[in-house]
Length: 88
Image 1 (cartoon, rainbow, N blue to C red):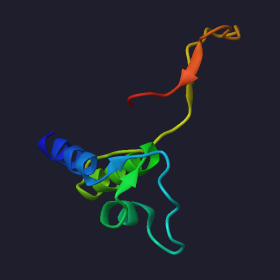
Image 2 (image 1 turned 30 degrees about the vertical axis):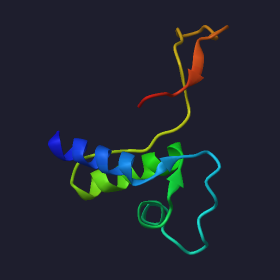
Image 3 (image 1 turned 120 degrees about the vertical axis):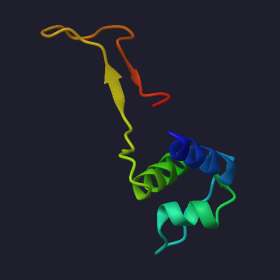
Image 4 (image 1 turned 180 degrees about the horizontal axis):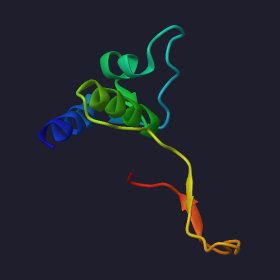
């Protein structure tokens, strides 16, 4: 848990959050470019870097994006049952 927290702190402090972050130069490794060269990033940058570092430290990790739905078998969720994944 201490290693995971240290990685989270390192990634959090590696760049400023900015949705206007420019594109990565062609031919670069995404996570390495973010951690070593970019001064800004947004959710995909921070999540990718954390996942790569966690896995390198032997901690099982996955980067997942998408939607979640609370549904009952046979019923289509209407009105607010689905939404973006957040905080995971």
